Image (tube, rainbow over all chains, first blue to last red; front, side, top):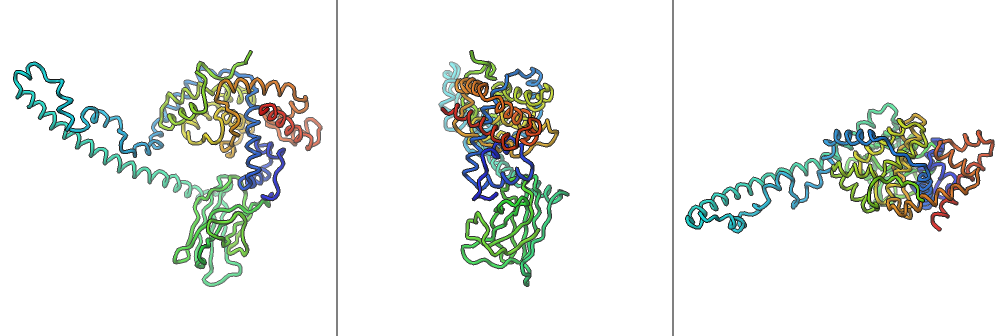
Length: 292
Length: 188
């Protein structure tokens, strides 16, 4: 079940069709995560299955299904602007309300030229009327220009704030869910053997979501070019899964929040080792912290 | 000669057009969502219907998958291969989940397809569908039935072995052989 032992294509096909038992599926998922060859085999099997899926006799869904979907899409429209925030960052793109300001009045200097065709016969007879109108328009254009700049500034500020807030909120929600999840596995990691001050780590892990939160204290400072690396030891007996590298601060504290992990991998234990910068794919002994 | 392809009154789509549509959906353009639905609803619905044999339940799967795209159009990445192929497999997996009356298994959406199949291209899709059907028709009966039971009925190899009386290894080998025959024919 480690990277040295590849899975047979038969098993990968069953995995792709979700026909393996939970522990077997977890073992395959953990292996595929680390093994390029099996990942490639799995990709090919998925392609075969996609082709096979197209052998079904085709049926048209009821017309009501389309209406129902589009109504639901319209109902959930308000959630979409969150994804659209980055677009507002582009300084040259104008939002719809601003477009009307900008069109033809983008810069006051262009106004006399744009305004020229408006000169009426009466304007020729009474030039001062034309100049007065131009002056008034130029004044108005200047005001609008300033308003547009002010609005752009506000939008840029708000977009920036939202960009910072949205990922933060999502991560905070995920952290909160994991911390309050009654099914979460909570593990205290102790030094082996204990020393003073005793380095200690606490892992909170939700296997079904692949969510892991790890906090450690009293860690020893690291030698140059070294990092601590957290490992998830699967209950299936599969190879340890790297769960993030970290370095302690001056007080010896460190944390790993929401590392990228395959979902559904039941954990037997967690461990921490010291590895070269960039992390390792296999843990290097000794294990600094361990806990089940 | 060709059977229907699942495309409704639309010009031949391409992978690039799928990417454009997904980009528009990301911007909240409802019309793009309608276009994507028109392009792929038939295959998604048909696969779900084949698994569930219940139009109402298949419609729920259809709705769920397209709403997932609307809520998170970034969930599908072009690097994962063809959107049409991805949707067909996701539809099958979601339908199997519904069949088992359980929550969706997460890895479903993370599946990656090889770049060889361009199922967004109508001509290639027509050709591939015809070829695939022909290859499947010519598979040995045991292989064809075993693959069908696993993919469309969601039966595990153990369940298939119990039903057919075949050894477990034989069941696995039949599935594998059928898929390999299919792959060879499509890449030939």
